[in-house]
Image 1: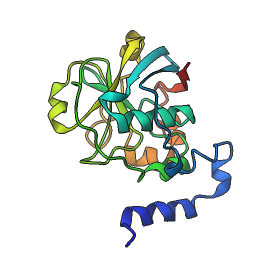
Image 2: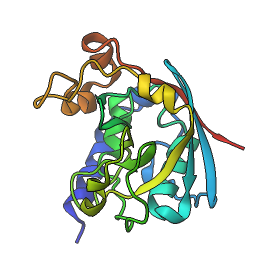
Image 3: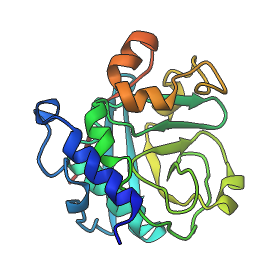
Image 4: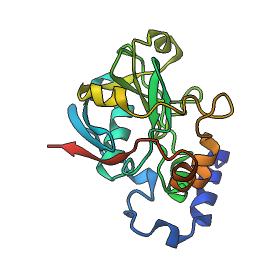
Length: 214
């Protein structure tokens, strides 16, 4: 029997117009094919509207998360993505692609949880999730030590090794997202992408390009 989540994903693929994905690599359009194993450690440079920062990923900390992140960065998923949820003294979140049609293809591409080996300390990067085994593409960087997240199953897979001062200064004026706060509503980001964010939250910083450093 095919699971409901798989059926939904298949329907999404069928309904997304091919023209809406022009310029997006064929591999990125097929989440199930992005399964390359990441190196034991690797660095990702984020060139952003507010400056550059570098994340070092250690695969042993969270292998499934590290592999997913490696594939997403390598194929350009995070390019032009906004830092849409920035809460001072807590964390900064990103990982919804600016093209809502591409985001739709990844919405149900969940990976299993990794055991928590490292704590959510300042500068550590972790997947956002909505319960067990729901990690997809969204991640956050801790602004402070958030060890309370450890027992909730949030498993860090890397840390910022340079440019944390840049991360600290990325625009945080909109605060928590709707409906709890005045920031962007994730549902609308998923459905409308960057068009919604540029119009209603123009001051958000964004990733110009994320690349694996050799």
